[in-house]
Length: 162
Length: 162
Image (cartoon, rainbow over all chains, first blue to last red; front, side, top):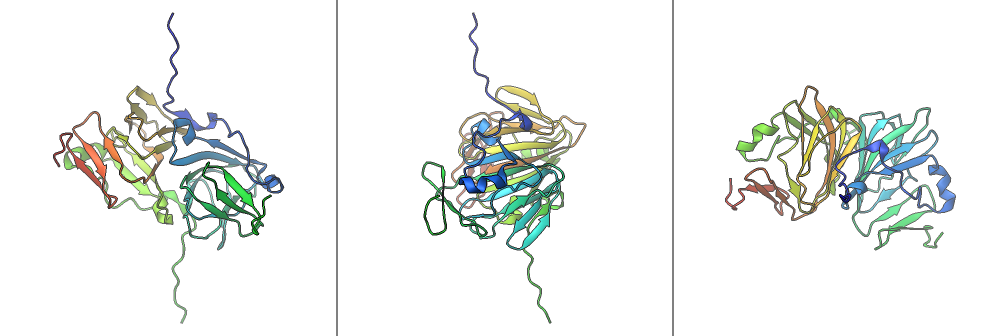
């Protein structure tokens, strides 16, 4: 009787990827803002470890993340569908499919995408996994540090934990 | 008189990005295979340094790269238009818009996209910039190493330079 052999994944329809198990790692009081966000990790499915790529979907009224800036990790987004508003320190910019934006580590320019609706927003997001990263959130009493275990730890700006 | 201040780039229509200055770094005898390839670096325009993102276009008959595998750098592609064939050690897979593939560093599974036509292929490609990377090309008398200056050096498999 032939034994079945595990099939190595070669390619994938991105929409078929499963959503990540934990919708948000934020402290509970911040989670409502991203309740309409779904992230499908794509790179992980192929064993990539140096960077992550997600196919992310924002329902109307939802934000991509609490507005933030990384100290060591670069980020990049490419809009596939919908018309999100990119909010940075400099103000608001409407984006549409085929547009992209990059957020350089250490720039201090905090960013988020907001979906004002009525359409669903879909985009690809890329971020590397440089260690010892920290994140600042200028609009909220929140700060984050990346632990040696790869998990984010959130605290208030005075250093007390949530 | 007011002085003009450089405007910081916030977002960009990806198609408006300029193609990279040097179409290919391959030794001359390999360049014809990628003559119909155009890469528009996107991440660099936002000052990203940990990884690169290109919007790449393949004319019919063109390949994305000589079939290769990296030792340290991960790669990822997301198809935006056209129907390329992904060639890996395991064979050929037809891809279509909305499909993605990832190529993990150190897997030894060499890959390339081929555009059999008749449509133009467009895709996003992501690769990190881990140092001391090397590249093997199983189908050709070619090998590459990443120099400390960030430039690729190509040689034959016996180590002699082109």
